[in-house]
Amino acid sequence: MGPTSRTVVSELSRERSDHSAEILAKGHTTRRRRWQRWVFGSLGIFALVVMVLAAATLRLFVFPVANQPRHVDGIVSFNGPNEGIRTARAVSLAEEGYAPVLLFSQGGDGADTSCPKASRVTVVCFDDASDNTRGEAEWVGRYAQRHHWHSLLIVPGRAQATRARLLTERCFSGQVVVVPAPEPRPPLSQIIHEWGGVLEALFINRSC
Image 1 (cartoon, rainbow, N blue to C red):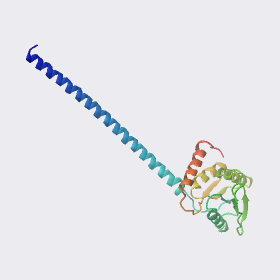
Image 2: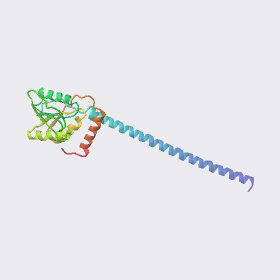
Image 3: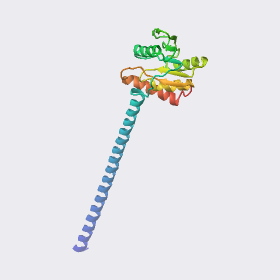
Image 4: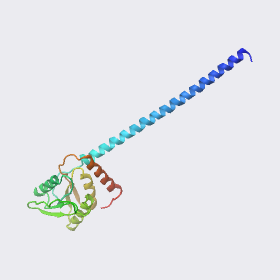
């Protein structure tokens, strides 16, 4: 093989080597770009999920849908945190003449909530053995059915309002008016509790 042939072979080898390096570089760049797209796409999806969750939390538990008070057959006070604020709101609505009867939940057997008094109003206090909102709604639904009621005004806590409305409407076929107690913004622990209760009501215990 002459010098010219060796030169041609050497140049061909370099070209092949350069071509191989270029292919490897392009492959590396392509993988890096795919990885970057996957990372940015995952971060975008995560950010979207967080935004949707935050918006749902605000709508369901921090600023829940509420109604204006109106005349009904009975008022229901649900048990829970900030009991003094709930009791005051329910008693005030009853004494203002929105209903002749106030159903007042004293919670479960371990609760020490006292039965309130209200002027010119019949107050019916009850203990719920289940000690939860579902049990209260079931008790209220049975009582309303026995007395042939067609409308209820319920006074839950702010974070509890969405779940209380859902459960009461399942256990009572009449009109449900929701007037949450003017509680402060709920803590994170209460919001987590309510999320669990709503998800359970939607996907696990779907009956009254």
